[in-house]
Image (tube, rainbow, N blue to C red; front, side, top):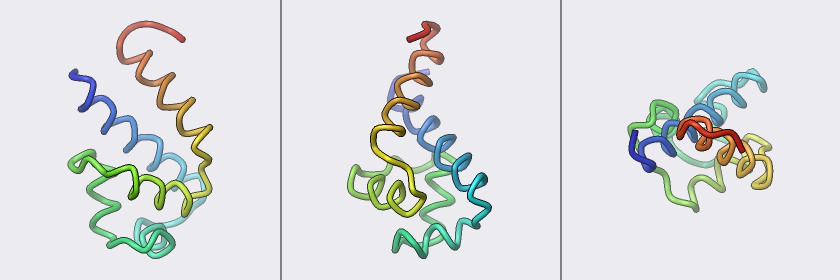
Length: 85
């Protein structure tokens, strides 16, 4: 899987999992992040490659720190690439 596609899929996985832990809907997350609900759905399906600005809004709304996000992203990219960090 090319790295950009892997990254989009991992962003989707992280966001969706955290949203599920919070037990909030896509609509609620979208409201908190001040984006459209369909935007959250597209990010979670990895059909949209969000900008850093939008990632920041989504992470903030979901209560995910950049540090935690970065560590999870790095670990998942390593796993997808077949190497463990």
